[in-house]
Length: 206
Image: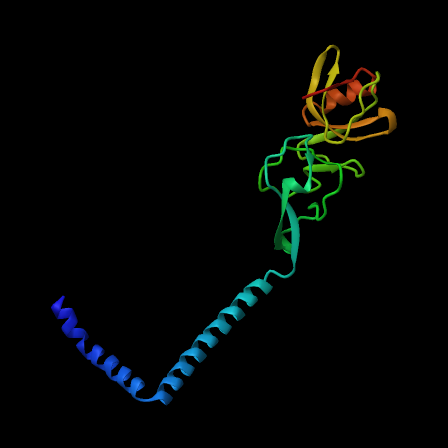
C-alpha cells in the first residue's frame, strides 16, 4: 500500500498545484467551470443525436393494444383487458387492430402480452378471419336455440356423437338461420358432409 501511495505522489502534487492555482484566481475558476460545462453539453448533445438517429432508423411508430391478462376463447375484451404499446410500424402486422371495437370477443386463447388482432378476436359487426389450422363451415340449425355471438364455443353433433368439439362461431345470420363455425382441419370434412345432409346439430359448449 505504501509503495502505491509513493507512486501516486507525483499525481497528487500535480492535482494539488492545480487546486492551488484555481483557488488563487477567481478568473481561472470561472474558465475551468466553463470548459467543463461546455464539454458536458457537447457530450449530452452527441448522445441525444445518436438516440434520435437510432430511433429514426425504425421509421414511423404505431400504437397497438396488448393483452394484460390471459383471455379464453369466447370471453369479451374491453379496454381494461389491454394496454397500449408503441412499436415500429414495420413490425406491425396488417391484421393488427389499431382500435378496439365494441362487443369484441376472443376467438383463440390469448396470452398475456399478445397483440390484439383480427386473427385472435372478432366483433359482432365484422367478418372474422378463420384461425390458423381451422376451417369455416356453414351450418343451418334444425332446432331453435339461443342466439349465438361471434366467439361462442359450440360442439357439432351428428349421428348421436360429437364429430367436432370446441368449434368457434365466426358469424351468424338473423334468427340463427345460418351459422358459420370454425372447426379443426381434421374434422372439417365430416362437419361439412353432415351439414350438407342436414344431420349436423349444434350444441353449446362451456
